[in-house]
Length: 205
Image (cartoon, rainbow, N blue to C red; front, top):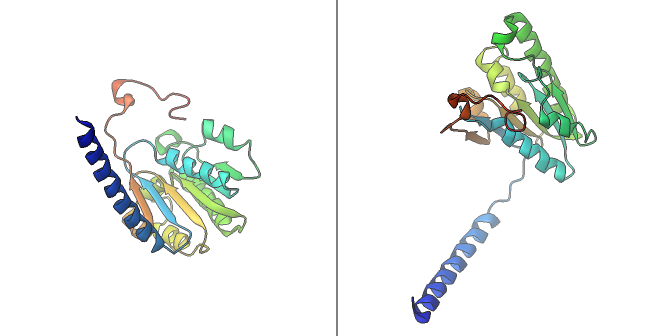
């Protein structure tokens, strides 16, 4: 490519980027609302809790206090909890699950565990010092009808105006999706488990 052709291409590119920049600045200037968000991470793919914990780290980096309640997980020690426990002034981490229902084999116990975890979520939502609450795997207990969906949606939508609430887990109910400000669905394309690879520390937990 000759120097002249290269210069023309670069000039066209620069002109296009100036127009894109102007359009982006105009769009961003129109976004003036600031509010607490109801965020849902759902879908069959891996990464829902991981994404939520990434948001927790981001919030902590801004000096915001975060509350985490795990509904299903809790029977095993995770890397996330080990790290977060080192910052008690910035995060409250409550692993209140006892494993999946096929492990406990006791529905009444699962319901009681879900209710206790939900009570903890509500306590955190009511605490003005906590800016973000993560209800990890709440969608799973909603799927099994361990908690009433209507109650969860009512509490979520009645939270303080600047409080962020992040809910994770596959099979998010339609009512929660409708109420949410941001919904991301993780899609599974490939997973090593299907090839016989077990869950590994640092990747799965």
